[in-house]
Every structure is written in C-alpha cells, then in structure tokens.
Image 1 (tube, rainbow, N blue to C red):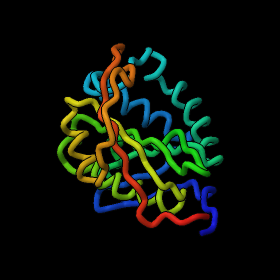
Image 2 (tube, rainbow, N blue to C red; image 1 turned 180 degrees about the horizontal axis):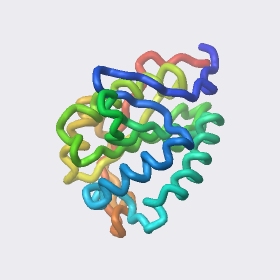
Image 3 (cartoon, rainbow, N blue to C red; image 1 turned 90 degrees about the horizontal axis):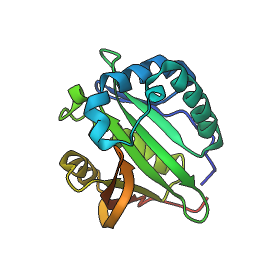
Image 4 (cartoon, rainbow, N blue to C red; image 1 turned 60 degrees about the vertical axis):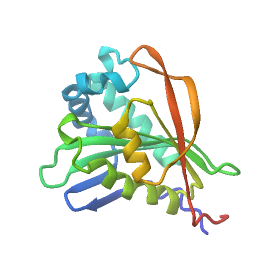
Length: 192
C-alpha cells in the first residue's frame, strides 16, 4: 500500500451531513460554535479559559492544526449541516503514531441542537474510513465517561469494543474523571 499520509484533506458528505478538515479560515465559525455550546459542552470537556472562545485564539490554533494536518500528525475536522451550512460539531484524530503502532485517538463534540439526529454517527462513518484507508491506521482508540450514555451508544454503533477502565483518566471540567477505554481495529490494514 502506498503512503498516502500527505492526503490531508478530508471532505465527505452523507445527505445533509458534511465532515471536512478544518482550515485557518474557519476561525470565526469554530469560535462561534464553542461560544454557542459553551454551557452544554462544559461537563464533557477540559476547563476552558476565556481565550479559548476567542476568534484570534482559534485563528492561531487552526494555523498550528493545519501544519499538523500537513505533517500527518493530527486531523481536526468540522461537522456541518450541508443544507444550512451551520457547524454542528467536531471530530479529531490526535496522537497519530505510525510504525509500528499505526494508531491514534478519537475525540469529538456535538452541538446541543444536533443531539439525537445522527450527525455524529454519520460523521464518524465518513471520518473513520478516511483514517483507515488514507492514513493507514490500524487502531483508533476512544474513551468516554461511564455516565455519558450518548457517547457510549455512538461508539458501540461504530463497532468500538470495550478494552478497559481507567480511573481518574482525564481532567474534565476541573475534575479527574474515570473513563471507559475502547478501540476500533482496521480489518483491512496492510503493511505499507
């Protein structure tokens, strides 16, 4: 299999759901998404300082992420309603390690008004194959807090299997939270 890690642009659509790699020009959109969903996302994410919600912070962050995309080290993607052009969430693949691990971590967030409508399931159905086919990942790891039943359902639906339990795993909203550890393996992985 050829090395396609330089194929950095993910841009896929399924009906009204569009998922694509972020770019520096998305700073206002991403900033607005996090401002609009600040209270809703707070219990599920690290504690955010005021700067996190600012457009200039996101402009700088997205420039750095674009470089990580180019280097094949991380992918930060945005979920949109393709009809309304409204941003509905994020999908990120971080800590990409190539040989011999061929693995990465999955993270995501979804707007309050998009809950229960299939946005995340469809976005992941497009983003995960990209990581398997183009980035040649063998394993994608994801974790969730035991009381986050929506996240549990999404990961189960995508075929992630439970691997374990991690006590005080991530600092979420200022408190160390336990997490269920899961992963999904690429059944078609081939040595590059």
